[in-house]
Length: 244
Image (tube, rainbow, N blue to C red; front, side, top):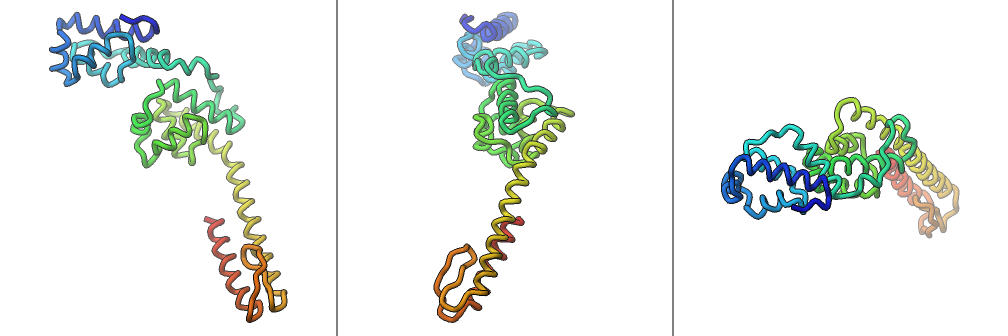
């Protein structure tokens, strides 16, 4: 049995003792669980960390107790990945001050949950409609934050957070991202004002050239009035887009 990673070896020892106490061969255990003998042997070898489902199925088929089994599997998974020890444990969400700290906290929670496969992680989050696999990947790699409080809560739910902690981290997300949302709204309003100014300028220009709704001069053949009406429509569409 491989004890290179002690936590991984401890999990394998539990599985092996469980099978021996049940008096079952790997072939018998395979027939009982529907898993292959090779999968069961590998799970009890200590060389890899089996999936949580495999561990639960293995122990249940042997009549073993499931109490504490999840913690044992999680410790083995965390030790096997070796990433959590390199990350700083986040403080209270009320004291998280920026997007970078928030992103680091989400990575920590993911690794503390054992770094499950993204597909399984999305299932734990409530489905792809709440947290797409691609979005989960970007959040885990610290390339992006959740796009909404709902997605933030879904991510943390998959990490195993519950109750008050979900509310507190949801509030932290809202506070940290609110400023950036305001900044985007200011930029959108400024863009609309620029368009409006361009339209007004086109009304005062003589026939020959006007400034269009995107601020670019272009020639006209029948004076600025018709072009100004067209540019006004462009301005309205841009304003509606910004407001949405």
